[in-house]
Length: 176
Image (cartoon, rainbow, N blue to C red; front, side, top):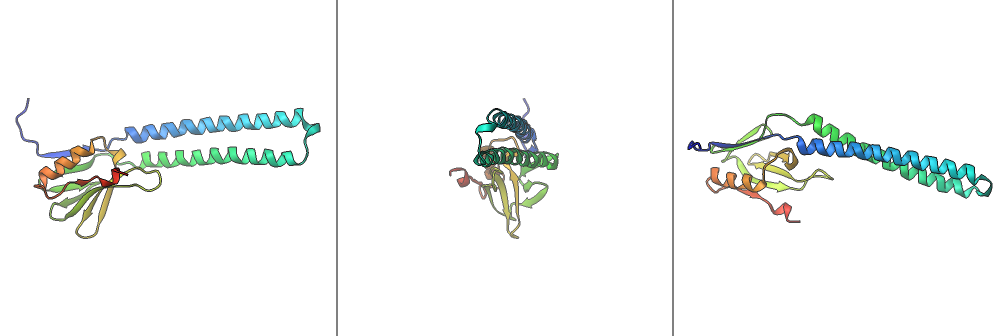
């Protein structure tokens, strides 16, 4: 057991959750493609087996069913591409560092006197919550919580300890 004091909290980027999300979406794309193929096979089968009983209105029904299936595939593929892009753009190294001098988030260091607030904010459309540092200069730097693997309460208590109680993490966005 070491009796050395802890000088800082350094949290590395952790791609595990982002990679798992990408793999899940890749599986969903495959599932939607199989569903599209089955839909087409059923429609072709219905057309050939019941072609003498179908009027022109059935082509509208077939068109709608095919359009819905293709839209599902396209939407799922787009979600997969976005997840893959997030994995590829995720940097390596230290994502968040808090010490007695200040906070560094996403490679941007701020002294405690430069920090106005640290908060968890809602992400945009399916992005999940972010931890955001607001600086006196008006600059805002945010980091997705899914890019780090540490309880947000640990970040809060560490920020309070190293900033001498001046800053904690505003968690009110997680309440809703």
